[in-house]
Image (cartoon, rainbow, N blue to C red):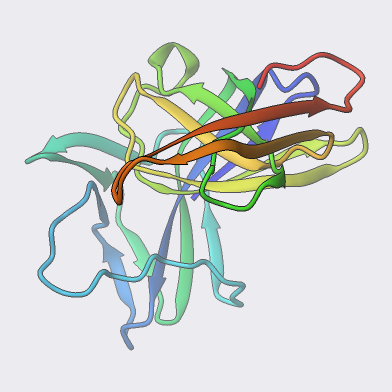
Length: 220
């Protein structure tokens, strides 16, 4: 799980990563050695359910100024080992800090993806936040996939502005997150000059109109 905070200009971001452990096994584990394998392991069964954090009376957050996990390559995956044992009580959800990074350069983008098979009319323009997993930005480690929640201050308090899932991301790769749809940007798409050539081939012209109701220019 990742929690991020955008700055006022949407140009830099702080990022905290957490490992969530839920114990519903019916027993407690004292001084357990915890490991996290990051990667897509092939399983010959139905897809496992993604862990969905929930509010719990047993939630415990464990944070330290020093890194708590060490990372190593393991087969074609990456393995994170907790540097010290941790006790996990039955029916407890424990969150342990994986890493922290601050002032990561980000780029806010507006994106429209053509969907010419759908009905013509007004369509949404997405707001994207992109950053690179580089060591010079305090990252540069294999990032396990998970949910990213992003917040921004309105001058008085932090407000939630969107969330997205990120896949397993190697070092030095770009991460792109969809925050939502831009309120003041509109795309309109329609099809003209449709021509059926055969039962498998057709030709058409598509007209795309982009409208900006914001007070400043943007790039879509």
